[in-house]
Length: 338
Length: 286
Image (cartoon, rainbow over the protein chains, first blue to last red):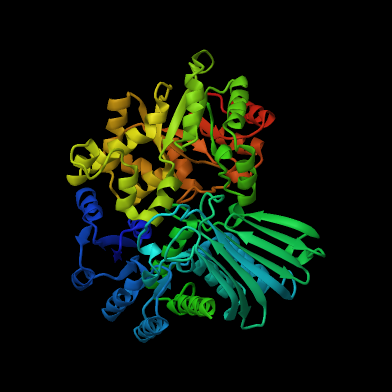
């Protein structure tokens, strides 16, 4: 029997998740919940999905096996908590929570009830970043001396009023929306940030939130590096995220399309020549049954559903990992005010 | 449809393999004249169809073509709408309702405009028609025998199982524009089944088809099965798997499927265009 899935919040990510859950061989999209009558009426008219405006009612009535929460960040805590207390496996969009004590509470509930829990840091399902992680584990570029994590894109390129994304109280701003992805990548691929210094949060076009974040991170291992993120850069067609690692034996630059490796000496075991080797996503992309906007969006849902079906503990993008990212976001905010 | 369709990714900094190459392309094709020069070179090799997204800058290219009917009068454009990043970035910033307000022509809140009425009545098909008209405005007076919806939108509708929307699109394009509707997808077999389920037969479907199985969702086997067994008009795109395949082996592979009507490819140099076109004509006789 197929798992019954529900979605709370039908914005860009919620709709994207809905379109991926719908055709999934092990799941059916049973119910959706949103406050916009325009969106719900489209579902009523063109799909057979049960529509709700009250998430509690949906979770009470629909007998769901799992739910995907894709609402503005400040709603994550009550919604995820309510779902998990009903024993429903939960996928939550990033960033995870606005207050770390709330995030801690959710991590605890998920563990107590052995529920599959996952957060939408989809970069971990991009083949090139998976390969980067493998390369670092294999110590290909030797002891690390520095890293740079970057993301740029054209979200806010004009001065104007905005939505919840321009409200710092709702989890808006470039730090929550863009930088969280890069922090999470650094944390899972390079190491967990332990402290931050020299933070700049710059407003470029927005009135109430930062459009760019620049900061220095020190990891638990002692390694230091730079975070540089700007969502007001229209020289990028869409969000572009990259990590650069410098080691004693070489350097790696990795983004969603390619991984470029420079070695001071050849590495025959890895079949890598001296100098530059460039490998492309075509070699590493995760095969998916349904594609929308990128393999990673389907692959992360495949992982979540497969953990539920196989009663397996999830290891990628758990609540606990996402909570770590929230903690670093807190450190960056605190540092910027000091 | 022509056997060879010339694409536009190279003009708009779309490179599925390298963000760095995208940037180089953005610099090279900064001016519209650079795009027109390459289009003219493609025409000199005998290419007669340009398949392009409804990017704002295409309006300048169609304007140029309208002004020189002697030169471009028989040239075809296959528009692909919408230019999705425009909407995707707007949705992040403005939300879905905000984006509809921004892009549906006329004042959406005025009941005296077609948009206002459609919005208030939640006439989704009416809204779709308004957005289609807005996207196609720039092609007035240009031959557009086939009009496509981009894969992001096709695959979203497909995944949400709102197949009736395909039916409405299909009949609107035929009735209002007297053109053939086309569909770009990353999920060709699933789309074929969905279209058939609402009575759309022998559709024009443009999808990734390559020897590597890159971006062929569900796997190469089912794609090959559909290319052999099903009744539709396939266009192959991403035939070089974003550059991972050599042109000769890539096109040779396509030659195994006589049903493929056209091949879509983009290139920036005349030699490259000529070479690919010749390969297509050599290996894909039908």
